[in-house]
Image (tube, rainbow over all chains, first blue to last red; front, top):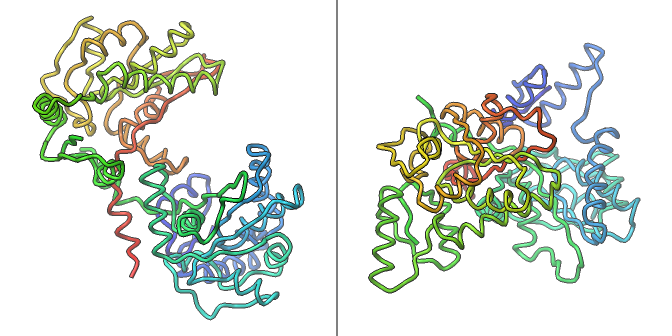
Length: 224
Length: 224
């Protein structure tokens, strides 16, 4: 398992308990990705892409099926955009089952990869991303995730870093859920009015992403 | 609303959004409690006790009703012991509905207020408590919570601070739930074997208590 430098120690420890070998001398997502591909090629291993793999996408899609089971009347689903795998898999599952459900992606204004790709109708590589969540995303969609977005995503809303952090605080204070900035992006879109839900009967927002480093919190609970 | 000094800034802010006046020059739970009683007496206000009030206990009891609705076959419920209001209300609701359900309280080994009170069969005041959760509990049960414990709690398990913190870490790493030490006490009891659940068909553990200060985490998400 290749991890970029920004992955939290908590996540590394969690992955390690599943028996994975961790490689962590990569600085960025792109770098970790390239090193993992090279490693797999050199050793004849199968490379599991974190989002651009049909099996990964199908796994994400099961979340869409769970939503349909839990909220049969769902008519709007908000999904954060990181690597675009979560939204691709979930949107495909929802739309293939019930084409009338509206799918809205939410991404950082400083890393609008899906917005620019959908506007262009083709793959576009961002020269750079400028967001508190900048290390969480590659700078371009893949052929596969672009195709899914073009077919199944109705619109994409943008939220600023400040709004995402405000939404993070709200989720912690009101719901006792501590999530990463992109995990709170859907809440930011609702709080800011970037997405209006009043005319929907049963809107659902997926809050996903707990890659938060809480080592400083546990330091306060040192047991003698 | 009187808060002891250890209450987190997050909680204070949350309470303030509901329009409460916050008084916070108290060091301990006992002190905040006494000051609130005096304040209420001086101004002719109704004092809402955080656990030793029939209406507070009835409110806690609704959690027992929710468990019965969600898990109709429940036969064991583990509940952390802090002020003893949560366990008192929930145990009463469960046992009055279904006397066969086993209720196990879990409390810090260094603050065994319910253990010593049930063993004595009467109110006992601990001279002191020595636990990472020491500020969370008064040093004695009340007449009312002792009565509830005697009638509805089958046994009490003790867990060490180290086990509670280990359980906190597990809840964060595996479930993305960040809770306070007594909130994780029930998990500590399961992980340590202090409570054996193998012979129960449908055990339920209540994870309650999010009084964790995460200011240091949010400091890492400062937006320019």
